Image (cartoon, rainbow, N blue to C red; front, side, top):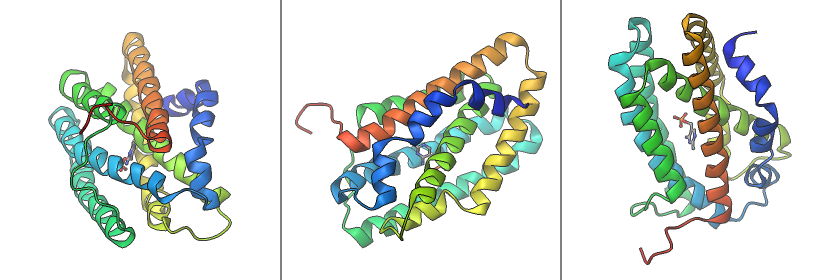
Length: 217
Ligand code: MP5
């Protein structure tokens, strides 16, 4: 079993808990209130925007054969932002003045710290985990769906064949990196996996519950 699968097997209960988040269930059965979905849309737009410097910081540390693949994802982020903009315009969501919620702020700062300060193997584990989490979460939505959703563009984006292929590539490259890693580094890779899993769970929660700094903003 490769390292990517080993992580999922070892932490399958927490992973399952993430997939069972009520936010995802409400998206799947079409009962999600618009303002609740808008919370997610507004915050995730900021997240994707900040994913650009995260991946950019990884490129100088990356093995040569990863560099072009990572650079291509930067273009992918651009098209993702356009999907957010198109969906926001279509459904009347305004995200011009979004203050990143505490969880989002913590998450994007964490991404940037790992990419800037830690070994490439750890940043790549973070990339794997956040992409795999998204793939599995939106696949869980698609599996539970009984009819088309008004938010279908997002479901389709993160369950597409192209996205599945991309996550498959990251998983196999992570397996190779982990095979070459010494035990302490592998341990840290697992810790980063758990960090991301926690943030991913909290991110659905921030959309579901609403989250603010508690100050007039
Ligand atoms: C992703 C995302 C997927 N958009 N938002 C969160 C909170 N986690 C993961 O990343 P990408 O870069 O949009 O595929």
